[in-house]
Structures are given as structure tokens and as C-alpha cells.
Length: 275
Image 1 (cartoon, rainbow, N blue to C red):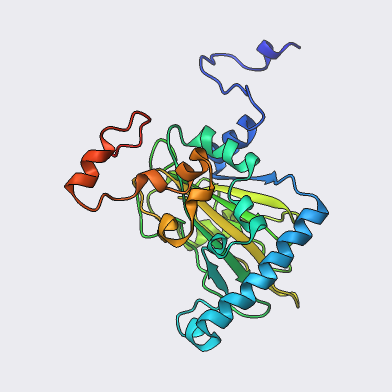
Image 2: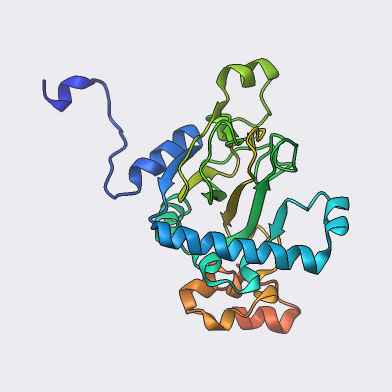
């Protein structure tokens, strides 16, 4: 039987033309996919060392009590701003950016990067169902933002792997408890992989029943008119990056401080202007 005999009455169909197309089809349909980040064991070890050093610096800077009072003890906000090269490079992963470029046509920026730690035996601030564009109840024909969760550790059922509600990016309202019990699934994934989602897909961290923390580095890439969680160009020296990376970091898309600054954006010939 040839391929044309497998279906009939089909006028439009999805054709995979590039390596990322299959993953994009899964995101469009189910709201999520899992991809290999392309890292060697040596590179993963360097990332873990950088994260370990960063976390100690972060807690020393803000204080354990201060962070716990704000339910922030199990997070590190904008870790790339602390200058660790492996963590910075993670935000520019070629496999992830290929997916983002495929899903978000036109300009996009890194909206946020956060280290997320799932502690053993206790709840944390990512254990509730949420979208990575929280408090929003609408759907769009194309993604407004893409979430790329890097698995620094292996994600297993035992250590609280992320749960998702498939296709929930296509529905405005949060589903019923009975629907969640029937359809929610847990995503086991190897260390070094990315769980990539449409940011409107409902998801949450599972309960960590193991004896070890489970760590991940989350990235959100969004269309430029969605403000960054933290102003990245104001938080780190972006002049060391080339023009393409500066665009991803949001350098050209900062809110003009006055009319003169806005008018200066109008002379840009590369689409940096804000409309």
C-alpha cells in the first residue's frame, strides 16, 4: 500500500521539512515535546558545578530567611546575570532556538531564565498548576511564548517530574478535577534534555519522593511586546554579545525613556522599532 492509500479526502496536511518540524507539530497539537539538548557528560558536569556555585552565592547574597519569607528559597532568578558561562550559553542552545524560531515567526526575546529546585519531601512554589504566562485565560492561533525547561537532573516519577495537561494550551479555562485526573501525564526525561512547551500549556512540578533535590533551568522566550520578568539588559553587560544575541536578550526592545528616545528607534532599518 502506498502512502496515498492511507487516507482520503485530505487536502491540507503537515509536512516535515526540517529537523525541528516533528517537535513543533507535537507542541502545536499536544502543547509540549521533549528534545535532546546535545550536551556531553563533561558539559553537564560543568553546568552542575556552575549551578552549585551560583546557588551558594545567591543564598549568601539574599539570605536564607529573606528568601524563605518570599517563597523564593528554591529558585534563583536570572542566573545568567551572575556570569557563569555554561549557564549563559544554555539560553542560546541551538536546538531550542531552532524550535522557537519555528514556532514564533519574527522577533522574540528571552523573557526569563530561572533555576528551579524541587526539594525532597516538601512542596515548593512550582507544585501548583499554572501557565508560564500566568493569570491569562485566552488562546491564540500562534504561540506568544515558548517555555524550555532544561533537565539538569533526570526527571523521574520518584523525584517529581513535571506533569502536564496535554492540549490545555487550546482551551481558555482551567479544566475540571475529573478531567485532570483522567488526562494529566507525567513527563520523565533524561538529564540534558529540554521539556519544551507552549507557555499556555498547564503544568506543575510533581512531589519529590526521592532523597535528592531535582534541579532544572527554565527559559521562556516570548514575542517582544510581552515585558521581561526581569530587565535583562539592565541586569548584565549585554555589549559583550553579538547583535543576534543582543536581540534575543531584548536590548533593542527596551521601553524608550522619553519621546526623543522613541523617535530614535524610528530610524532603525532592521525592525528594532516598536511600531
